[in-house]
Length: 196
Figure 1 (cartoon, rainbow, N blue to C red):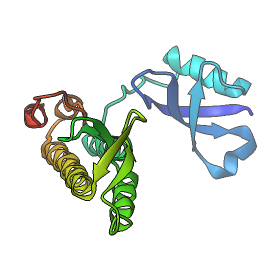
Figure 2: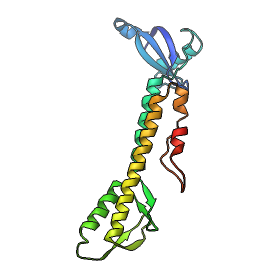
Figure 3: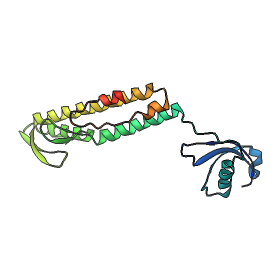
Figure 4: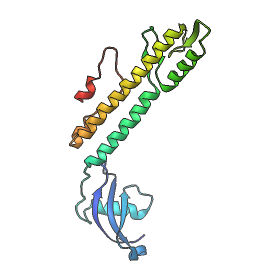
C-alpha cells in the first residue's frame, strides 16, 4: 500500500505500542482517510513505515493516550462480574460441623438431594471439600445448606458494595484504587470493601 497522506496520530493504549492514524492510501483514494493502527512490528511494510514516520513527528505530535472514565468503569464492572462468578463457582467454607465444605450451587443441590432421600434413614455419608467422608444426619445437612446460602448472600453483598464503589467513582484513579477480592481469612470482616 502506498501512503499519500496521514494525520491525527494518537496512542490507543498506555503501552504506546499502537499509533492510530487517519491515512489516505493511493490504492483507495476514493475512500478518503481511513483509520489505521500502525505498530513497530506490523506484518505489513506500510504499517511499520507509518509507525516509524509517526514517531519521527512527520504527521504531527502524537496525542497521548487518555483513559476514559466511562470505559474504565465498564471495564471495572466487567472485572467485578468475572470475579463474582469465579468466587461463586469455587466457594467453600468451614462448616460449624468442624470441616470444610464446598459452598457453590452444585454443593447446595447435592446436599438438597441427600436430604430428600434421607426420609427413612438416620445418617448418610457426606464428602467434604477435602474429599474426606463424614457420617451426617439430616439436621446436619440442613445446617450445611443454611451455611451455603448465607455464604452466597455474603458474596452478593460484597458484589453490591463493590458495584456501588465503582458507580460512585469520579476519576480513573478512584477506579484503580478498587481492588476486587471476594476471599477473606478467618475473623476478617467485609469492611475492606468499604474502605478500598
